[in-house]
Image 1: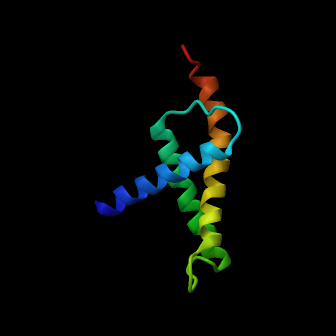
Image 2 (image 1 turned 180 degrees about the vertical axis):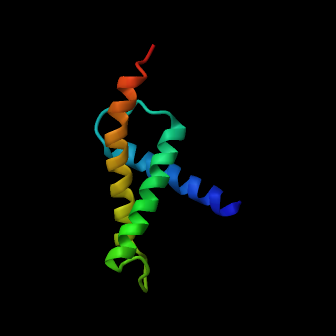
Length: 89
């Protein structure tokens, strides 16, 4: 249970950072921001493991940059589609 809460917290932080990096407004709800951030973290971990940088002797900067990069890409891709399918009232 604690691991799920940790994943959602990290997903929310990554999602918010990704929204801050992107230009303009991203009209997606907070829960979608959190889920896309968590998906970015998962994809970043997978790629980091694949290229052999998931666990290093210090801070895993490459892994964290990959996580953030995937979160940015996911939010940049999903946000316009969400805005198109859910026009503001």
